[in-house]
Length: 124
Image (cartoon, rainbow, N blue to C red; front, side):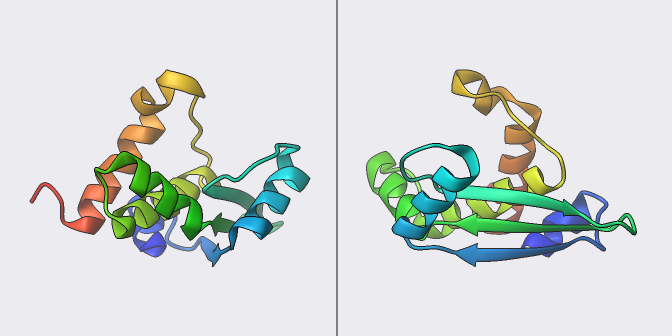
């Protein structure tokens, strides 16, 4: 799925790994990386290589996704995990979004949701 996003974005040679983390490890990564306490659902790191290729790491916390799905009542867990992987891939590719309410109106969010629809078959 991440490979498809990379191809759609014109980066088929990029190499990106996706790692699923339990809550305690995700909290520790969030604190160590960003100095933030608490659980987050996805963290990604672009790792540009000296030869110009792009590598990246995406960390997803399924427990955080599950909690979000339970709270929203609108999404399936599978869809949310796809959304988080796509979100992480777009960050690796250099996309960013503002915090707060502008997040869901950003170019990144619109691109993310278009890819989630493609990958889940929604809207067909």
